[in-house]
Image (cartoon, rainbow, N blue to C red; front, side, top):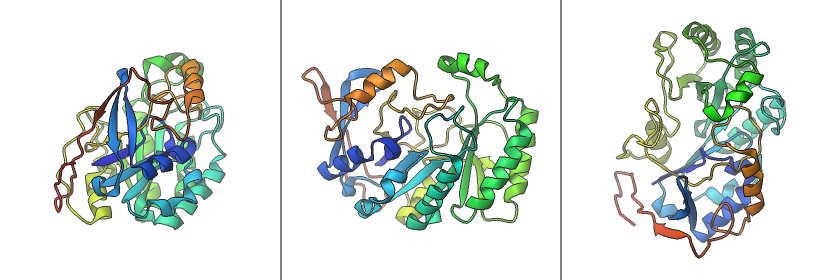
Length: 310
């Protein structure tokens, strides 16, 4: 079983105490996104987890406690973009997060941290030239601290249409995408930093940029030292190449304030949800209720050297 921590919220930055409590107790209750009264009980014991995938824009709160993960295999997806607080309202400055990235890499190794330059958008302030220069500056600092950078272009979700109009953000043309990606490819030429796209259908192979995967079968196999028997995650977008996983996060629970966020749909609901959080609860938000329907999640190891069902 691969556990995603989490596409739905920034658990390392915001809820790391809760997460470590869940590891200590050996399970978590995960809310069904389509039915708020249904929960899956997911075991978190080392013997049932092939790999943990952490997603974060600021994993600093976890760094001092990484020794508590010594029985687990894992890696980090670290989103680090050059935007300021008009776009990412409540994140530390970029320079500070670059130092956090380096600190994390020094702690766990560059093979276990992926840089996400994601999402890319353009407007009057953030032009093609802006991204060319910003990526060059960031890659110059990060190239020795990771082996892979995943890139994607902004998605225009209906719930943030008005915000995009306010910031004059429109869908990017193929020409604009190619102009940016050609430059980014030239920046990493001659380094060991590999560029991949996330859930994009455009062919950028002429720039040595391939379609990638965030929950990456090959990367996980290298980390755990064993082949996997896995399937493509049918719950993700068509162009997503991620393999199947279980996500333990909850939508509308991240207050970073990024204007492009797909996981925060209602700011009022967000702050109501955050008030429900208790780091001692088996649920991310609130405590189990008598009306909750809790079902044990089937646990299947994907490692070829052990296919036990739990």
